[in-house]
Structure formats: C-alpha cells, structure tokens
Length: 270
Image 1 (cartoon, helix red, strand yellow):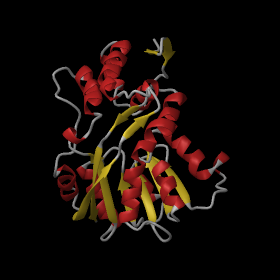
Image 2 (cartoon, rainbow, N blue to C red; image 1 turned 120 degrees about the vertical axis):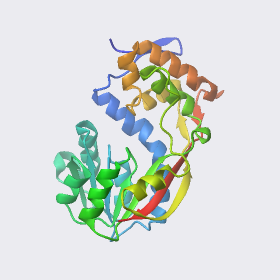
Image 3 (cartoon, rainbow, N blue to C red; image 1 turned 60 degrees about the vertical axis):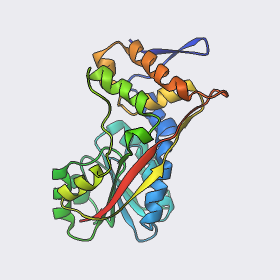
Image 4 (spheres, one colour; image 1 turned 90 degrees about the horizontal axis):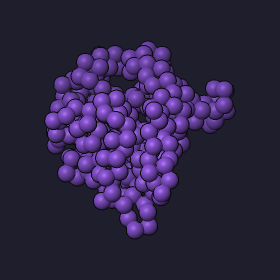
C-alpha cells in the first residue's frame, strides 16, 4: 500500500521507497539542507583548481557539483544505483558525454573500488554514511601518507531540532531504543584515530532544515531512507502520523517548517 498524508484537507500520496520520485525528493528537497556543511568544509580545505576530491557515499552528487564549481576534479562513489544515476546526470551531462567544464568521475561501489579506478585524491570527504574503521585503515594503506580526510556527521542531539522527528524512525523500527545515533563530542575524532588517521582539527556548521510546507518536510525526511525500517516494522500511515506530530512544533504561521540543526566535521590525514 502506498502511504498517504492528510495535508490541507487533501490526502496526498507519497512515493515508494524504491521509486525515482523518492530519489528526486532527496535531490530537490533534502540534500540542499547540507550545503552549508559542504561549503564550510571546502572553504576550510581551500578546495579549488589542483584539488582532487574523492566523495564517499556521494549520493546524487550535490557536494561534488559544488567542489567542481570551485575548479576541483571530483570522483564520487556510492552503492545506491538510483542516486548515482542522478549524480551522473548532474556531473556528466546527458548520456555521460561530459560536456560540462570540469573533470568528474563516478564509481558504483566502495571507496577502495573508486581509488583503484582513479587518480590519487588530495581530499577525501564522507558527508553521507560514515566509513567504518576497517575501511579507513584500508584507505590509509592504499593512499599513503598526507591525504586529507574529512568525516562529517550530526552534532549533539540536543543541538538538533530535527531530533524528535528522527526518534520516530528509530523508536518504531526498534521499540525501546532511545533514539538515532548522534555524534557525541569526540565520536568523529575517535573514529578517525581508530582508522589510523592523524587529527588536524574540527568544526561545527549550522545546517537548518527549512521546508516550504509540511508535505515537503515529510517528503524530504522520508527520502533519507531513515524511516524505511520503521515503515516495514509498522503501519505506513502510523509512521506518517507520528512524523507529522513530531514536526508540528516547527510549523510556522506562514506554513513553512523550520528546524535549526548543528553538524560536526573533523579534518584528518592519512
């Protein structure tokens, strides 16, 4: 059954988890919320001509597009075929002919597959799902010393207004669980050290989630995939009902939804 959302007295059908519309929702609604994070990292790392960016979990490619716009060469990798296809349209143009004025490559697979199929990067970014310790260790061994690595994630739960909405996903998917996995004060640093990286610094970036209306907020958050397990574990309409309830305190008089959030990142080197 396709889930529906009561919105302004109408029942609106929402896209299925495996649909092209879901990928478009991510690209057109949700992904742009992280632009302040992408830009802050690129500014700090002086990303531009001569930089070769390897984007792990690049999704639909917005972060890579911003780096390419600064003059960097970019190489993205992801295991999500649908998102990677949209990244290809953005970065390589129709049919992969690459008429656009930048050097861009995409690899379906893991970080190691991307490294094997491309030049040695000067900057590795993980803006999506964080790599595990073993993946970082393999990456360090393959790249050698001196490559900058930036790991990014949620800030503390108490600094993210979206936290109650995300707790809906974790609670319905796994009853009794307190909430989503948030980056504590030293979590990113500890991951980097366990992965054999040398720490150089860290930063915090405000990434408010702002939506034109409640429907856009729901579509955007569902596009993250964080609610898929909850939908499978419970009734789809129940997930939507509780998500809308969690978002309601952030609904403003003009109908928009606004949630201030804080993201963190660490800078390290192989």
